[in-house]
Every structure is written in structure tokens, then in C-alpha cells.
Image (cartoon, rainbow, N blue to C red; front, side):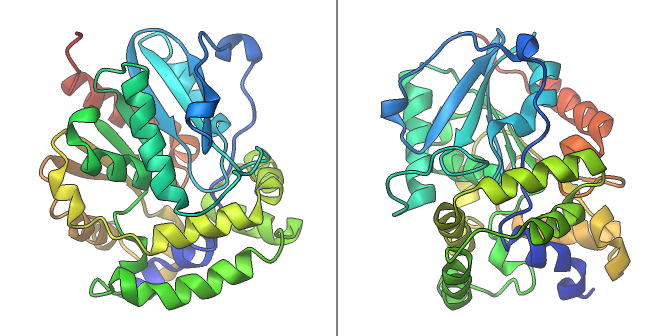
Length: 312
């Protein structure tokens, strides 16, 4: 299998940082916050809390505010208390004061949020960069989290084309792209072209393009750099909870990839994760919760029912 061809959309779009964006806003009444926290305690993100029940954290991908999860929140808010994360600097939100150790700081602040809000083993749903953060915080403190739903994300994205790649070896390319990306905002045309590789609906592509252009370039560039130079393939062995990995391959069909070949790449990266299952969508592109919505809910519902967290 030609990994370069198989994952060309990832390498040209996801790794160039502007494809993981937001969805159209859901009606305000359906998503009205139920409580507030103290933003000063986590300067790298804000939280909107919706619904009642067992806690669920929803973490978006690169350049994407929490509105990417609007339909997911509407689906789960009667069963779960949804804590919807928006990372600073993404999708038009104010940029963080510092980008130093950006993703590590987000990880640590998320762990602190879980502790201070007394969230008992929250289910964590993460898309792309958000899935990576879910894996990282869970491997850092395995006792803090409940079941994980990882939406089209990998423990080490830089190793997609060459599994022997190390975090150190990825630094020169990541640094070069960090410099290019932080030099200015993407044009509307470039952002729209990237968005079109990640989703199919025209209205979503248009909305996604606007949020991409609105993201802070320096923040996006640093998040990308951190993502490309952090290898969790060994770290995931520490994760104790069950993990559902939802993968996409429809976007790679034009490049000759097969469902089985794409799944093999996922399985290779998740080999050290003790309790996991990888399931591939046959219809959805990278934004599986948008492109293959009913499949996404069917897979996630079944997984969460099977791995329900006992109430305290």
C-alpha cells in the first residue's frame, strides 16, 4: 500500500492546519448553558456546559470552536452533561497570551478542569486534534477519564507515511511549516479548498472557511507544531479505559486507498492501546460527525451503552 497516496489528503490539509473547523450554530434555546466555571483557571480554552447526566467532554479539532459539536450535543444533552471545549485562538476566539508549550498546557488545564469541577470519569469525545488531546490527557492521568471516542485521529500524525519516524526527526519539517503558517492568515480561496477535502456539504464548507480564516495564525501554527512533534504511540499503553476509534477513508479513495489498508495504518498506530476498537466509515470524510452522522451516532451510542460509567 502506498501510504503517501493513501494519506495525501491528511498531509496536505489536516497537517496544514486549516481544515478542522466549525459547524453552523444550533438554535440557542437547545444549547443554552446550564452552568459556568472560572475561565481564569484555564486561559487556553473556554467551556460551555449543556444538559444533565453523566459528564461528557467534547474537544474540537484544529481551528475549530466548540460549535463543531452542536449536533452531537443536541443528541446527547438529555443523557449527558456536555462540557463543550473551545480552544483559545481557534475559529475567531481570542488568542492565548502565550503559545509556549501550547498543547501541553491545554492538556494540563483540561486535567485540572476535570478535577476542580469534580467530573467523575467523564466520557471524552475528541475530533482530530481534539482526539489527540483526549489520548494525551488520558495517558498522562489514566484515572481521570472515562471511555474515549476518538474521531479520525492518530497518536502520532507525523508517522503516517513512515512508521519509523520519530518526534525528533519530524521537527525540521514541522518548524518550517510553523514559520510559514504563522506569517499570515489563509486566503478564503485556500481555506475553502482545504475545507472541501474534509467535508461534503456545501453550506458546511462555506461556514468552515469563515472560521478557518478567523483563526489566529500563530496559535494554529504552534498547535500544529506540537501535534507533529509529540509521539503518543507508546504512551497510549497507559490508558486503562475502553477507546472507540472512528476512522475515515472515503476522502482517500481517489488516491487508490482501500478500507482495509487505511484501517491497517490506524491499527498499527494504536497497537499499544490495551482496550480499543477501530471502526472505519465507508461514507464520511474527515468530519465524520457531519458526513456520516447516523453511522457516527450508531457507533458511539452502542459503545457508550456497553461501557457506561457507574454513577458515584
